[in-house]
Amino acid sequence: MVQQAFEIANTLTPPGSRQIMQLALAQLYTQSPLTVPLEVVHGKQPGPVLLICAAIHGDELNGIEVVNQLLARINPARLRGTVVAVPVVNVFGFIHKSRYLPDRRDLNRCFPGSEKGSLGSRVAHFFIDEVVSKCTHIIDLHTGAIHRANLPQIRAKLDCTVTRQMAEAFGAPVILDASIRDGSLRAVAETRGQPVILYEAGEALRFDPLAIKGGVRGILNVMRRLEMLKGQAGKVHSMPMIAKSSSWIRAEQDGLLQLKTRLGERVAKGQCLGTINAPLGVAHCDVIAPKAGIVIGCLTMPLVNEGDAVVHIATFEEVKQAELSVERFVDELDIHPETI
Image (cartoon, rainbow, N blue to C red):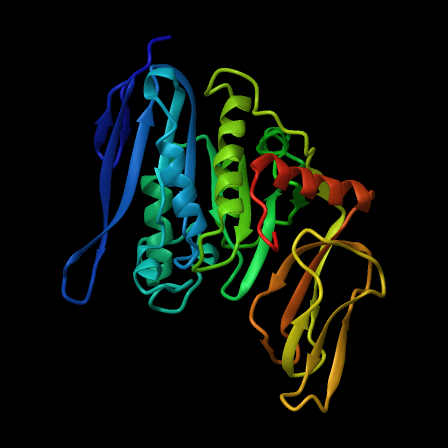
């Protein structure tokens, strides 16, 4: 079968080539044009059309650097299929270093959107119509919210065979069989029959070397699994562990948090994970693990209010194996920060 030119945003990209373009999205108050950056890498041979997108939340920066480094490693002459890379989906939020759109809406709760709706709805509709509709598979890149860090992990609906294969091929140490949230990109992809995995790693407004290197390697692994690139997935000894469930432990009082745990650590039921103290140390409250598991997310700012999410724990059939999966993941990437 002869590969045809790939069309997106009324622009043709010939086989065996790449093209950078700016999709006209909206205008600022000054009526200066606002555009969404996009690069197409179109292989010489037919194959999947893989969308790799980041910064649906405008302050989640790790995915932007993942896309940047990934594109430098893809040769269109050796590519089967097409990569559509969008490093910044929520350009409004990105400009303001904010998770949200100017109307304070979460773009990842606005899909599929509407041509006549709110700003968030219109941006979502634009992205679905102009970009998502042209693709067959999706990798959506995220980080934790501001002041919260996530262990590298994949979230996906594992009852879809292709989605499960993509999730396992990625090679992150933890996979969450995550339910679909209404209004999310994953929810729309599910209804359209497009396999999608979501990579969570690091925290907002920060570059995390482990998250970035793991993301680049993971996407290349998925591309090999989809036969877009030749060869087997990269050498991965850390077989991803699928979590049975996960939940956040919340602060039981206001104060200053001193965490005694870190991302990737195995914790036991009843273990003290940290303390919350008043500024003068009068009031004291321990943060206790209600179950055994692995820490996959944690607060990075010491100031907490009662009810704030502090530590995210995932449970597994084999907790020790999950801990080993995390350790091997870090060893393979050869990055050893003080805390993962």
